[in-house]
Amino acid sequence: MDHYRVSDFPFKGSIGQLLATTAILKDRLLDKHLTHLDITAAQFKVLFFIGHNRANTPAELCRELSIDSGSMTRMLDRLEKKELLLRQPCPQDRRSVRLRLSPAGQAMNEEAPQIATRAMNELVGCLSTEELHTLTHLLDKILRAHSVAASAPQEN
Image 1 (cartoon, rainbow, N blue to C red):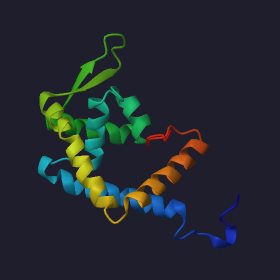
Image 2 (image 1 turned 90 degrees about the vertical axis):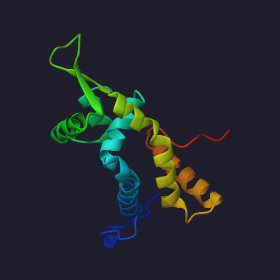
Image 3 (image 1 turned 45 degrees about the horizontal axis):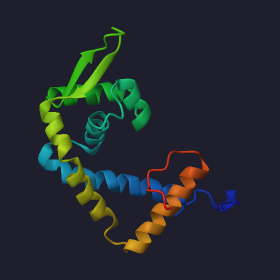
Image 4 (image 1 turned 30 degrees about the vertical axis):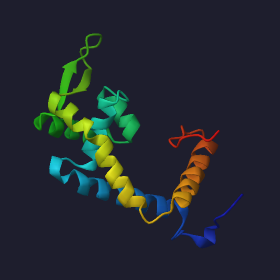
């Protein structure tokens, strides 16, 4: 079904514009909740992905987070300088490195659920429980229609 027309361009108030603006707001709120740790939302996501075994190489992080390799290298350098991340040579491929959290990075990652919960509650605090459920259901429906792994819990 076509919901947009060329004559509507640039689609101000469209789903694309609203999703992009909401994603920026989400990261700003996350940044605010991370100030006491002296890391950014982007760095927090890298630590989270490594700490939850969703990625353990720079290339995997680039794919998962849609970040170019140059930006990822600079971010990993900053996290390593903050002693939150360790780079280790890959035993099977000396050209590659494996990433893991340092003890300080692990401690920070243990705070992730509390930090993310506070930031997300601030983001959606204006919605009722029913409205949040409807929003997540609809976004999940869009993702499934495009064969993207759904992140919202499935209903039975």
